[in-house]
Length: 262
Ligand SMILES: [Zn+2]
Image (cartoon, rainbow, N blue to C red; front, side, top):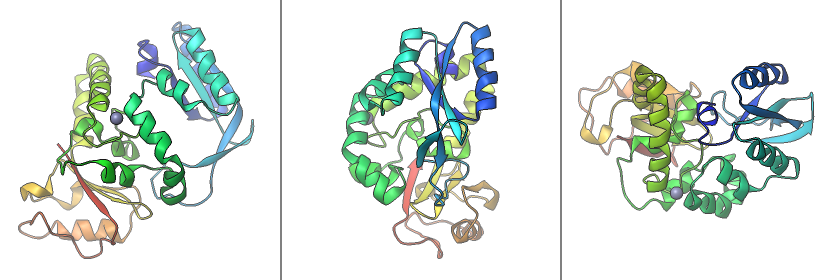
């Protein structure tokens, strides 16, 4: 919303129609343009274990789910985003309006089918496969922070160290900093650390600690999108006196990706 208000990009939010109407009024009072989708979206029904976040859904008639609000300060851009969705979604056009880097758009399109079929539309595993460096990666690109309420980018980066995404994130950080330095600090705190990503058993994060440094961490630094055996394994592992970087706590399922963001 902040980026839309600043004129940097057009934004799209998925919210209830009642909230959308209130948001449209708020935006109108500030000279922003908004449009509501003429369809709704409902979640797919299968558990994704990404907290309140939903990556898969389907369109339903208006009034049966959540609607999209398109928001921006250029009327033609807001209309273009609305029209693109109305006619089936033009990923290239939306990427342009949403300021998604070209390299990440190509990556998204090339992997869309696999992401949908294997990972409920999340790209973390595919991004890891495409990344050649071992990390730690720039915390700017930790979009997985979105599952905990904070992230600077809202697209799937083509590599964890994608430079275009970092530039995009820096712009977002500058805007946030202008509004509130404590908000900017909070975003950083929430995106730095070690993430354990499991496609089906949730996203778990040890906030603020990089395990490759042998940093000890506290059980209360573990946050999870779903509280399960993985959460418990990580909280229990926090009790050990030292941490070896290669350690994988018992209870972490095979196929889990560990990522570090600094
Ligand atoms: Zn990229």
